[in-house]
Length: 122
Image 1 (cartoon, rainbow, N blue to C red):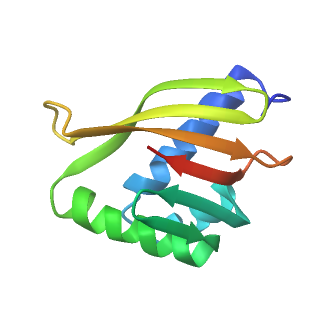
Image 2: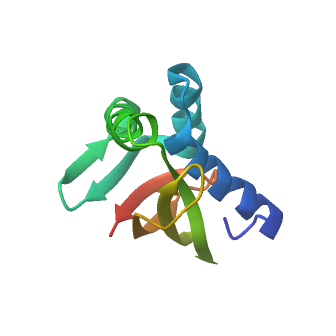
């Protein structure tokens, strides 16, 4: 990411967040392959999600629970980059507006091609 412009960074974080909000399963799958490396991992307090298939299952479950069922959307609240590391603060709020219902911090380590290699959720 250190080779990329601020505009590319903004596009990257928008693509990252769009995957979580994407209703179409095929587009969500395509987005996962564009955002994470094939062996990319997300670490959460509840588990590890290794590879595109595990990420697909995790993201689809979250989409079903929060976006489709509860009408919430994920958005970026703040982002900082340092070389090949990205710290991203996210929020979850009603699609029609309203108060933030959840938030967290992601720490992403990127591969040389700019995709997520390691994704730590706090």
